[in-house]
Length: 353
Image (cartoon, rainbow, N blue to C red):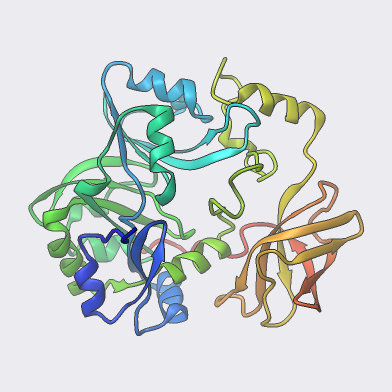
């Protein structure tokens, strides 16, 4: 099957990006600047990512709120029109995370549900609605200077608060802009009609926003301790095991997967997600065994932290393993010493706004 391409594909090629298959899309993993430069630019200033591979499922109509409220874990009554919420879609049989999702509450009866790249079909199956992924481009501008630089393109867009959502014209195009992101930094995500994607991308580049690839997006989210579906979330992994109890609206009378999740909460989890800092530059990698005094665990994501200068990892370990505990990680036959630390590994920088 041929890979899908975003409306910015030609721009990535023109900039010399290294392209890789990701979730069925041909996406830029890095530009000639390199992942570490792109990563540090996000921590120190601002970068922009093409994240159009993420899905958009538009759920609308008078029953849209009730439909989402009855299926997704988080409680939509905690927010209102013009806000965004992080939530989970669970398997009804075992409460494992089918997908983690951002919901943009765009208008009174209009919700844009943003599933991961490969999970759009499943979101449609459970939530209904219509797939609008192919009609728009999503540009994420992230970093402590994100708002200041976006203001050079659109003052209105730059003023949208964290987890707020608004319809705004950017470069003359009708866009949906949200104060959301996946880097641990402040920032905005701009859903642009495909025909205007090049104009908005170019305007942001002219405003000194550096393009960055999915490689930097992954190291940034890892430093921020944010889970990635297929690693820290997915089949056999529940929100409780992923240490995301706050994503669950326990006071809701029902949501998909509630009964098995309540049962797990009552009996206690068999494992818990923790952050591990390793000594030296060599990082633990996915699948590495974590040796603890309470038993073995497994690394779900690991990499070198450009900000901290040493390896970091997320891992499932026995629930009694606590912050400060020493662990050993078997990295291809070599033992790497580590310590359980509080997440996030790196906290966001002060906003330039």
